[in-house]
Image (cartoon, rainbow, N blue to C red; front, side, top):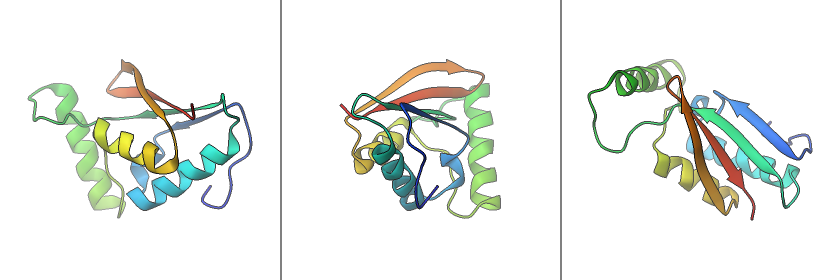
Length: 113
């Protein structure tokens, strides 16, 4: 995964990026970028932390997940929309779309063009 990724029109990752540091995620996403054609996409399913503090069940669950990642998985963390956009941009993606929210998870699409 950090050396190469199989080629495909789309790559699907669920609960992968929150396990890794920003540097590791950038490396993985760059490998994914190189593995898809110009019209390909990466589909990511992850929790997204709100930028502003909220008192909702979704935020509580996401924050608990963030604490779990930080304490049990060094370098891992839940991310905000801006953090996901930053990772995608560093990997070369031009478009980041937060498509759908279901059961505390976002479906995020990364497009080359």
